Every structure is written in C-alpha cells, then in structure tokens.
Image 1 (cartoon, each protein chain N blue to C red):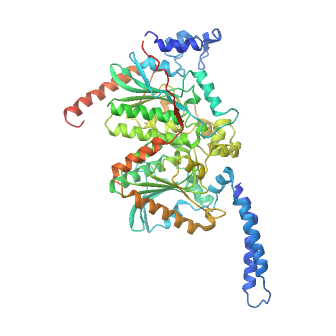
Image 2 (cartoon, one colour):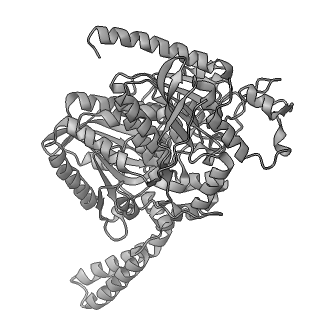
Image 3 (cartoon, rainbow over the protein chains, first blue to last red):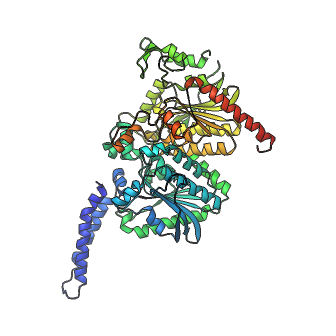
Amino acid sequence: MNVIVEREKGLLELERRINELRALGNDSNHAIDLSAEVKALEQKYAQIQREIFGSMTAWQKVNMARHPNRPVSSEYIAQLGQFDELHGDRHFRDDAAIIGGFAKLGERAVMVIGQQRGRDTKENLRRNFGMATPEGYRKAKRLAHLASRLGLPLLTFVDTKGADPGIGSEERSQSEAIAACLYEFTLAQVPIVAAIIGEGGSGGALALAIADHVIMLEHSVYSVASPEGCAAILWGDASKAEEAAARLKLTSADLAGFGIVDEIVPEPVGGAHRDSAGLIARVLGSIEASLNKLTALPAAELVEERYRKYRRIGAWQNERQEAVPLKT
Amino acid sequence: MPMPEWLRLRRSKSSSNEDAALWTKCPKCGEVLYRRDLAANQSVCSKCGHHFRMHAHDRISMIVDNDFVEIGNDVLPRDPLGWVDKKSYPAKLVGDREKSQLSEAVVCGFGRVGGFEVGLGVMDFSFRGGTMGTVVGERVALLLEESTRRKLPSIIFTASGGARMEEGMMALMQLAKATGAVSRFMEAGNFFVTVLTDPTTGGVSASFAFQSDVIIAESKAMIGFAGRRVIEQTIRQKLPDQFQTAEFLLEKGHIDAVVERHEVKAALTRLLDYAAGGRRYLQASGRL
C-alpha cells in the first residue's frame, strides 16, 4: 500500500466534484451562479493539499518516490528531441530495466541511460520493477564508454529500489557488473549529469549516478539501502522500514546538505505527477543549463574535479596518533 | 615467524578473560582447538581445514616479510547522521574498538611481500562487520593514491558486510570515492590484486573487490552482492550450500583462483614477480 496514494483518494474525489460544479456553472442552460461554491471547494482543496503535502515525513517521501504515476525515465526521454535506443550488453541479453541510447537535448547530441520502472504489473514484470540485472549494468557501462569515446555528454535518470537480488544475477556477478560500471563513470571523458527522479537505492542506483552534476527531484529519495533493506540488515525486520527511512537521511534537502546532491528541482504541490509535463521540462532545462557550463571545461579538468568531489564527501576526523612501531 | 612487538601489545590488552580465551571450537567440524595452536596455524582448523575469520593484524603479519608502516590510522569515524537505534553509532564504535582493538574496519600501509614492496590494505570483519563507512573509503583512497605516487602494486584483502548503514549516503558515496582511487591507480599502469576473504558482499564486493587485475579468494569464503537471506526472502526458497562460495565463483568464471590460506603469500609473491617482470619491459620499451 502506498501511503501517498491513500492520502490522495479524498483529494481526487474533491477534484472530481469541483470539475462537475465548474461544468455545471459553465453550462449556459443553467441560470444558477455556482462560482461561490466552486471557490469554497477550491479553497478547501488547497487547504487540505497543503496539510497533506506541506511537510512530508521521510517515509511519505519514499512513497511519493514510488508513486505509480510518478514520471518514469521513458517519459523524460520522450521529451528529448530525438532518441535512438541501443540494446544489449553484447554478452547475454538485453535488460529492459535499463534503457539507453543516442538522443538530442536541444541541438546537442547526447547519450542517455535510465533505469526504467513499469507503469503496470505487466510492464513491471518485463522490466523487473526497475531492478537491473548484471546485463543492465553491462549495457550501461558499454554506453558510457561509447559516450566517452564519441564525446557525447552523458545523461542518466536514476529510479530503482536497487540492483536485482536474484540467483541469476549472482551467478552472472552483479558485483562485477556494478563495479565495472562505477569504474567506467569515474573515467568517462565527457560531462555526466545524473537526475534522481524517483527512488535511488544503494549501489544499484549509484552505478548510474557518479556525475559532475547531480540533480534530485524535491520528493525523490536516495539512500544507502532501501528502507526495507536497511531495516532487514540492522534489525532483521523489513517491516521497520518507516523507522529506517526516518534515520537514513535520504531526502533531497538532507543530501544537498551533505554535498551529495548539487541541485534540487522543486515539485508541484502533491508531487511530480500532478504536472508531469511541466516538471519534465524543468528537469531537462536544468540538465541543459549544467551541460552548458560543464562542456566549457577541458575533459582532464572535468574528470579530475569529479574525483575531487567524491574525495571530499564523507564525515571523518583526523586524530594524530602516536605512531605504533611495527617492527619485528 | 616471530611475533612482532606490536602484535604482542595488542594481545596483552585483550587477555583479561584468560581461561575462557584459551580454547575455541571449530564451527565446521566441532574440534576443540587450543587458541595458540590455531593462531600458529594461520587460524586454519588443524582437523578440517576450516578458515576462521582473521584479525587484520594477524593477517598482516602472515603476509608481510617483516616491517609494515601503517598509513591513514589518524583518519577516524564521525557520526554524520546522529544515528541512534538500540545504541548510538558512537557507542557502537566504542564497542567495536574494544572488541577488535582496531580504530576502524581496514588497516592500510606499506610493506614487503616476498621481497616486493607493496601497498597493502586489510579489512577486518570484527569491526562493524567490515562495513564500508567514510573511514574505509578514505583509507583505501589514501592507500591507492600513495601507491600511485610511489608506483607500487597494491593488494587489498576484503572482508565486509557491505556499506555501513549508520553513515547512510556518506557510506554509499565511499564506493564512488574508492572506485575513483582504483581507476586512477590502475590507469596509471599499476598492478592491483584483491584477495576476497569470508565474507565479501554488498558495496565492497560491488566496488574495489571486483575492480582489480587479479582476484583471488580464500577457500570457502562467502562472496556475493546480495546477502543470502535477502535472496532467499526474494525467491522464497532455500539456496544450495555451495551458492556464493569462492569455489562457486571460480566455476562461474568470476574470480581467477581459489587459494588455501597457507598458500596465499606464495601466490601473491608469484603474481608480484610477474608484474615486476612486465614492468621492466614497460620501462625499457618507453611505455612507463
């Protein structure tokens, strides 16, 4: 059960009534003026919306990030000027949980890679709920390498609970696939812009997110493990996910504070899906603006600065210790 | 091999419960083992050959010829999230320090292995399950940066439950940090070897453990991305015993060799010798 979907139910009913009244009021056959009623309902609607979405808990944000209507990677890619999908890892199969290929952002030729959730059960089964197998990461690595070779800036859309935890994925080394993808991203000689559009879970998300500029939607979440995974690891109880979510500091504001996220794109009240088209346009606008800056830098400087950025992240202290003599 | 002075210091600190600490039982075959004999046998059961998890310091003294100069030991953890569950994160860290006599889950430094000077990193499962938080990422990066500067090969022994939950995203970002250090180190032409020990999973497995030139694993070590429990819950069936063992990974083509602990140093020495041979040619032919 998605807590955001539950909370929206009453609002959707209210919305339907407002639209009915509006339609009635606009109907010239009726002599009654309904504008006062419409206005009152609209005010009530706005007030409830503010109450529900004004300040969301971490767990509510997790649910917002997983909302079934939240825009998915393919919808962002559809708004690019052109898209020519490239398939397969050249070894085993094509993983539908990751899509990618050549595209145009404005006039600029780019490479785009995105984690792809399904919109319904059937599509989710085909796309494994956006959880990539090793083949997905090997495809991503191949495309990142190609982008670097051809000089195409790399755009990524991150939206996954995590990498697929199945038998086949282990047999074909999920570890190596993610490790190799991370390696490729640290070396790519082109600007990389990553957008966390939904849920960013664990190494499976990071595999597409080592970037020069990281954009995060206001209500997206990005965490070291999914809240369910974290609760299972620490307390042996996945049902304590809500508690884990509260502790993990996984919201856009938290991560901007840590220097892990460079830019937050605000969402409409009620979430990205309330105005998908407008939101997607703003995200693409942000990507374009950051590419304008990043493409002006020499490649060597870009890659060096990318390393420096991740080199700085973390919290540690330096304590001069008495050097222990380690002599036999 | 004589016991180094620094190892004796550590031992004397942790010998308060002397009598109970004298004996231990092999979890595999049940044999009761005298601890001193077990330590002398590189923590391998003399009856069934089971490889016990090993303290980082014991492992270092097993691998290096004599001296080991630690670096990065002044890099110590903080509590970025203000994490509290049953205990606070700082309290957990104090417990780990006492239990393991280590300041963090990895020990890094320089020494000689079979006569070859190397950068050496050794993880220890007894400190927070060998999880990778900021300090592990930072120390590994320092080791590889210094190895790059000194043009030395590097060896890392992994033992890890994955990323450290109590540091949240700061921990996940260490995968990016360590990977950046690995790629710069390797692209500069240096030789990187990882030795996967029990267990090597999650974020460590999905980063530097599997980014090296040669990957060897200790016999029977559990190695994988997702934990066994997570997979069993996902697929709702029990996994075969062999699944995710070093031998399983060798058969599937994911690692170069499975090596018994007694043979690890000899195997590393041979690898370092090949790389040194190649290096002489690279220098002579102007590629380095």
